[in-house]
Image (tube, rainbow, N blue to C red):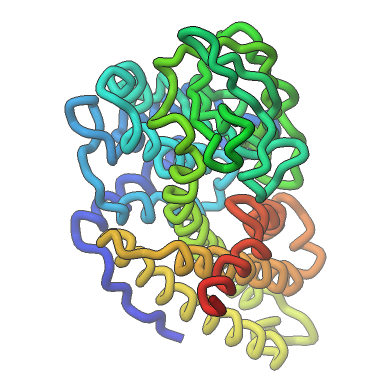
Length: 385
């Protein structure tokens, strides 16, 4: 079936896609298996990404960035990472660019921008976002990490877990409760930096998939964070998080469709070549019906996601539309990858086949960035109020 033509990218976007894909093929794809085995990507990759201009595309030129707020470039990077199957190795870059950096760009004052942004563009400073806690998942308002103001500093105590870029990170935007009496209005964002006394990293967590993406536990014991490291206004952290989550969820949806599309292509190639009972697997009615169903659903989802990208570029994407994209596309990603693995038979269970790695990497998609259940709650609340 001929794919619907995509109209949201122009020639400049196409050139950027080609450049980024070439870089992935040269620098990341050949090393992906090693980094998966190591459980982490080396800091040198970040420096290389910075040299090629793939970090901080949305950072002003005065700080060394690409000086563009065109989200199409971020979408292209998410797609190409999905198409090449190197999610574990390169996902930290999209998190750094699309999830962490917007907080600095929107909330940091001039001094903070001068201190952090140049290094975040070159790859010398790797960013992370510390929200999730051991006993607090999707309930952001229930976080327990505290930041008590004492003189010119906040004394931070608590713990975070499942933090992407947790081992490599140099700065962690840490969600803290600075006023326990005010509920979600007492939450603030503090930047905790590598080397601060009392800031310890726990395990590089052993995950089902995305092994090269370092994901860690973080512990804070009487960490004195200078008041100069407060991002934005005190007590506004919850509002800032809710504002930025739409882009995070859209990015997850964009990557989800790319992985689903790649899985379909791998499976079509495999089923055409694999013979059973005298004919290729692709010629069995069950295979044709299943592949037709999956291909149609992926195309439908692509159209919706492309429209969401357009809306986001025009600053019109709602939280509900982003939540719908996130839960629908990630659930579809898992369905497609699972069905495609089945069509690979026993070979689909072998890690040497990309479909096996994609199956393991995909499972987290319906969980992080807000579970499918929470996404449905957001959408449901908007249509039943």
